Length: 334
Image (cartoon, rainbow, N blue to C red; front, side, top):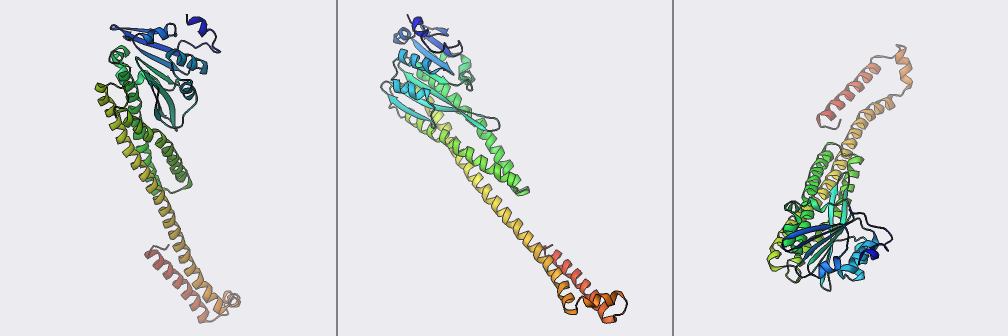
């Protein structure tokens, strides 16, 4: 019996951590423990989905042992991966994907799939709900009836479909930043641009490898993928091609926004320099006249002891300064 072995685990899995759904002879059954799992998978007429949510490492190793996975695959599932990937290990296909969620920042949650003969194993955090895939609304049994590879398509398609709302948010944010760069090119806008650029780099590690995953899954080199189901995986591949093109567009737009920011800063600096030059012209003109005639004449002027020439030069300096201000404003320097 498997129950005594389960008691040896360091941490007993909660009912939500393990979910086993099986289809056999048109009937679907669901269980929250692994009792009889090995015999169930050995049944050639049964199709099984094993779903692990936030599992303890011991539980992953235990389930891997029950389904016959290589220990290195179990270790790879327990450890976090930085990139999406697909690899063939014996008779099993191990796929790593990332489900995206965006609040203030974009969060990538790893989802591991292992497709074997007659079963599909999925391991993920509680941040991703496999029931969110719209294909599962028809019922898991309906999908398992067509094979575990068809269930793999349904879950992976749900993950990729979740990318589109994230990309729409990025498009809106880029539009907003482009307007902000034109309206107010301040350090806060620059920080948002660099933050968005860093997020797009992280996003590239999700989308680009995922495209390669489905390129391989549709190449008909995996026996576990039924010939009649390759078309469904091709549809996901087409979605990822579209997302990759959008990602390239986003990267170009952000780069363009950064160039626009620098151009705006340079233009603002040019405006400031022109205004300072205009002020210098006005002040320097008055200073030149004052320097020629000397400040010693001012005291006599205030005492009423200066002649007409002093007052004429003073008035002429003021008029010349006023004309300079008018001309500079006309040409946009003030």
